[in-house]
Image (cartoon, rainbow, N blue to C red; front, side):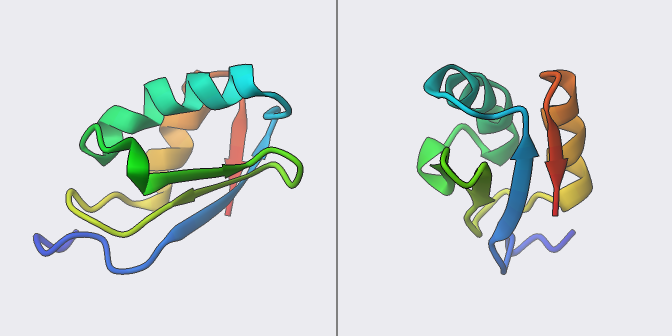
Length: 77
């Protein structure tokens, strides 16, 4: 990963996210991965999407998918 931060947004289809409770779980679990900055996370419950905005620290899709998997949900690019 580049030390300059993540250059492109990462978009995921989150299988198992269908209400605000799951969004709260994802914020709690993925938030620390993106440096605790919850403004880097955006959610579309109706479409089951989560977007990780670019920034520092840089995160990879595999890292996000592993963290989401720990919640019992599944992230697909």
